[in-house]
Amino acid sequence: MSNLTDLARTISRIAPGPLLLRAIVFATGVSAFGIALPGTLLTGPVMMAGSVLAAVVALAPGGPFVTLVQLSTAALWFIGTAMDGGGRSTAALVAVACALYLQHSACALAAAVPLDAVVLPAVLLRWFARTVAVMLITAVLGVVVVTLSSGVSPSSSLVFPLLGVAGAILAAAILAYLALRTPRRGAS
Image 1: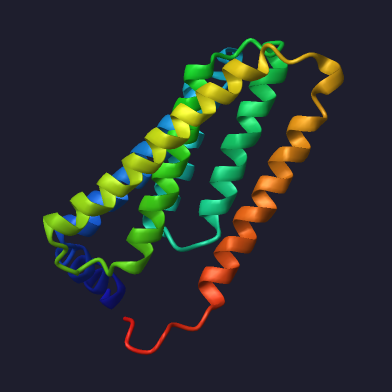
Image 2: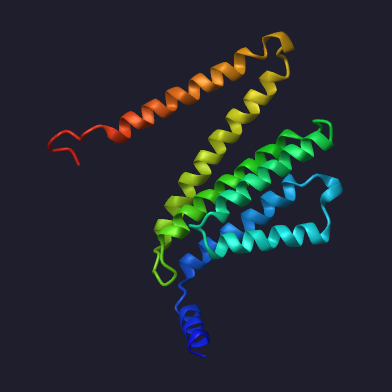
């Protein structure tokens, strides 16, 4: 009986900010799952399973299920692309990527904020503005890359993955340097 009392007490202490973050985690998880599903698998029971997975992630945004659900959604996208013969639209790809990024970002913030924390609206707005800015820049760059790649001949297609890997290594090296450097005296 004390477990139910503790659960009721915890639920009654949930603040609106953390609840909103968890709602975003849930909604973006269900959205990404639904968009990633191939049309032949888009049924009620499958969407119910996706909703349950999204709810688990929303309840435990700092747990291992975040990675599991994100990887499952990406796998569904690849399966759907294979089933449709590569006929998935660029808009759907951008929508899945944005939903997954928003879910991941919301999970990171929700995991850091206790359920009973008072989160100022300005904090949520700044987080949302940064997240949307990253999603817009990524979407524009993604559309440009997809558009340009349609005119590339198959014989030169090996160059682009190699350039992508080199760019990723360079970005990781820059981030590692920035993370590991010692700050100058007097700098905050």
